[in-house]
Length: 335
Picture: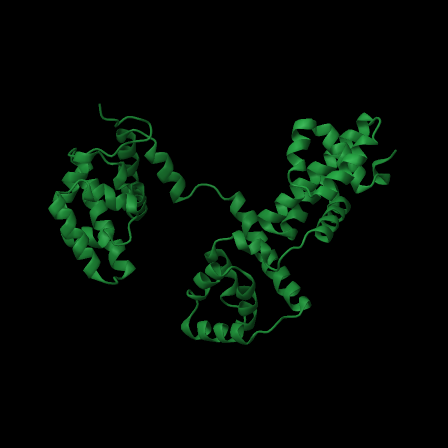
């Protein structure tokens, strides 16, 4: 019998037989009683499965599972582009058609896993009504981050349009969705092809010994001082203070300005705050906590500048050999 003549239930029965009793039992846990009864009856009626039919069923199941995964990752257009390479245009179209007829894809579902800044880059110059439609269909937290980054007048207009929006026609939604998905899919493809950059250099330098790092940075300072400074800034960020040895943290606390440290800790993670506080006297830690509590709202720019000044002090202490910043290759492990 050709696989094209098999029903979905027959294919499911062959699949479970092929997977074995243990795996089939795990699958059964996710089925209703009617489905279990129907499938068990189908399995009991199977006498023999030809090897080529078994392989075709397994291949089809694998293709469907991968297609669903592609849809979850980047939407239908992304899934179609990947499947075309494996199955050809007709095979990919057939697979997508079968999947979309059995699963309900929410509008703009592909955008739900993207960073808000990625979406913002493509919609900030669109008409406010288009922006309103998109924001209405993505999660509120994601939409909130996007709308807060828009110009104030646009924010108000978009919010008003969202509030007045009752429902949008499927044709309008599909059109807006298709345009946005195409733009984003092009960006995703470009991102996969990108390599190198500042972060890549920082990762490499964080893994070399101190002598090699100094040689490279000294050479960069001669060729491109601004680039060298930017790399140096990224090599140790304020949050990395948790990687310092206790005595190093205590030395840093002594050398930095208290106002800077309070500002820097304002938006720091609990892990960083705890690491700093446990290396203070109890009296000093309590005073710091009180000052930070009564500090009130502060500008993010001021916090970042304070953190940069502290990082500069840490790097200066390292350069003078007074503290050690642990290296990933183990060169600076203390014993």
